[in-house]
Amino acid sequence: MSRSVLVTGGNRGIGLAIARAFAEAGDKVAITYRSGEPPAGFLAVKCDVTEPEQVEQAYKEIEEKQGAVEVLIANAGVTRDQLLMRMSEEDFSTVLDTNLTGTFRVVKRANRAMLRARKGRIVLISSVVGLLGSAGQANYAASKAGLVGFARSLARELGSRNITVNVVAPGFVDTDMTRALSDEQREGIVKQVPLGRYGQAEEIAASVRFLASDEAAYITGAVIPIDGGLGMGH
Ligand SMILES: NC(=O)c1ccc[n+]([C@@H]2O[C@H](COP(=O)([O-])OP(=O)(O)OC[C@H]3O[C@@H](n4cnc5c(N)ncnc54)[C@H](OP(=O)(O)O)[C@@H]3O)[C@@H](O)[C@H]2O)c1
Image (cartoon, rainbow, N blue to C red; front, side, top):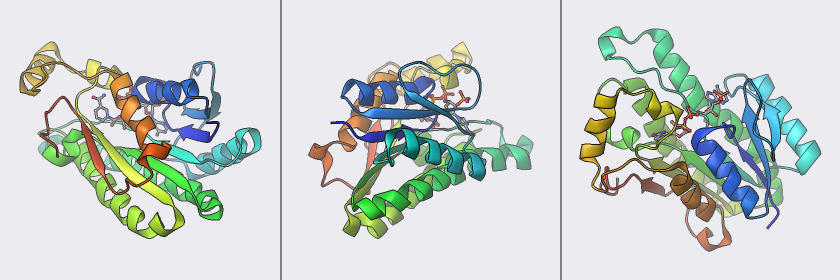
């Protein structure tokens, strides 16, 4: 396979593992990054998903250099954890603007060419937290739950055009995002996971790649939990 794939936030963590999984399968992979040196081996485009002009510019560059995006993985995401009483308007809006509205921006722009091609694969990276809730993460959980309604609406809207839209809901995965937690928090989380460990980014990437494969052609509007059993299928 040599499709044109875009992974937002593909410069590190889960996004980088996803980018590598597609590249290993022979696809052409573009990744976004915001600063620093992006990893080698991909078409790296500078793009902050909270900036509509940067999203447009990134798509133009990708279309020019590797063709219209056929597989989009909306992975870019942030946390700004805080109990509700202390959560600022900015903590809330930054997380929503990145995780939910940022996903809207990249999906909307990808959809243009997918509609024309009458095919496409879209995978959104949500979280077990969007479905279970988490004290101190009301902003993050709202953004990740929002992705489920967004994806399911699009699955209905775009199904007749052979475009599938699915959600992956990882549990706790060993990346910079979870390394920011205290040892005590990390131990507390592991105790609740039936498989008794954190997930690896590659374990998320494998399911994402499957959802974009021919074998998954009849799957749309699904939410796939990859969480060591933490959400018990939710
Ligand atoms: N780790 C987990 O346990 C876990 C569990 C469930 C879901 N997830 C989700 O999985 C996704 C990846 O998480 P991760 O653990 O790999 O996190 P991470 O290591 O913190 O990486 C986050 C990625 O998102 C990018 N990003 C953040 N804000 C962005 C913006 N405004 N525009 C463009 N890119 C932006 C970052 O780019 P920069 O390098 O430029 O900052 C980085 O590539 C996120 O959506 C996260 O919510 C993670």
